[in-house]
Image 1 (cartoon, rainbow, N blue to C red):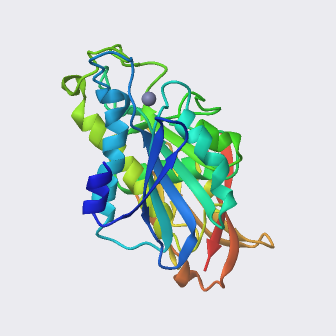
Image 2: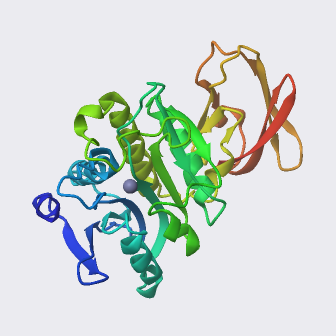
Length: 324
Ligand SMILES: [Zn+2]
């Protein structure tokens, strides 16, 4: 893995935490905010401690996703620093990540968000449902919302099961425990757990490759969207998805799209107000009008904060919209 990252042109770092355990890092320094970083990580050790422990799903799936992210992202530059992390000794108790995370703040760096991938290859019931593990710590909820938004924006077509409070048994947990913003993307642990987990039969042959590809795409899209986001909206975009209705981009330079991902066809009423409560815009849209567009440049309004109210038959939601 180290050789591959070197071949892609990355600066390499490592972190030995005991006589055998060693984490590997590949670093892509941001051109605008070199000290602010996003991380994508996975553990590369496997289980059980037998002569053969295939560990394909747990966790060659996640570590390969991190490696492939390294290959693809090497062709682009990002304003924020991106770190690809491969953790050792997750299986005996998250040893590699637990040893490393408390050291993050000791150099002058700020970690804005961490995405963990652990087991992405199993979808036994073929329902394309993946988990996003999240807890209300730092901007973790905003990261989870960003992932949901990316699933829609890039048409990845996963069903997302938001698990809050998220599972604490893999490498995103030490990030939460130290107050960092983090999410974990993985196959559906609750309802469709891999029956070959931690056996020599955990092999590539059992993968649902189309599902695996979708999970990897979700990780790449979320990481890229975060690392490109020069408006630094990590704390702002958390209200852009309500009741499966997505409003994007937010903040906006002008155009705002509204996508209704609800199954039913009930119409939604959209109204927009300024901070003084003055009505600026109203429209009724139906399911058939996907990607409804509001062009705020045509509304003759200034930069600033607005409220978009979404009314459906039995509920009303309010989203804070920032126009730059
Ligand atoms: Zn694992």
